[in-house]
Image 1 (tube, rainbow, N blue to C red):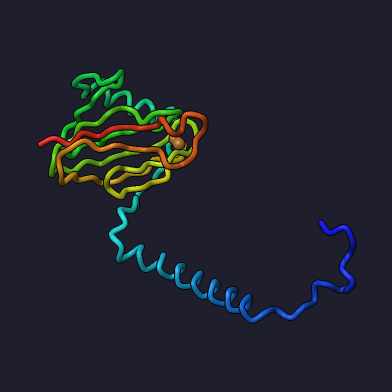
Image 2 (cartoon, rainbow, N blue to C red):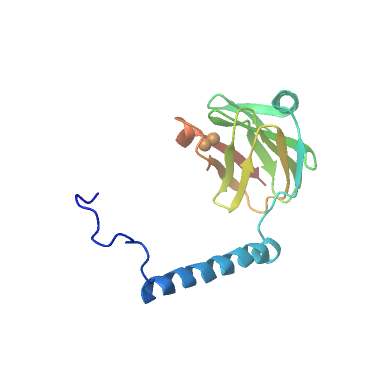
Length: 177
Ligand code: CUA
């Protein structure tokens, strides 16, 4: 804050400097380019979109997840149930403070309908090291048809800040031969 006011009373009515104008125009054009790229990549970018979403209450989703865990649990890992659902079936994964639950064990080259929802508030589903990212909200289930093509251990990290334990919100998917 200046101690004395500017000598010019109407201090703000100055011509825009050339560099600044160039900056504004190039920024605006680049913004337009990125906007249309967004639409372009939607079709051409192999974006792993979730094109299916339904309304569901957290209670309903939790019930379905629990039912699946009860039916197909094969063992436990660090206090988490490991679930091996049959190929082609509906698989449930829930996000809540601060875990992705349960751990899934899927078979390579088999397809699953993966339902993902949150029980409390927004979380981000990010499957590592692949580039699959989904925003997960309570009240909606996102459905992705998943066909893992490589065996291994995949991590799910939460990539939407969801509170004090956000950085510990890590889940797991095993893909087995
Ligand atoms: Cu869940 Cu961040």
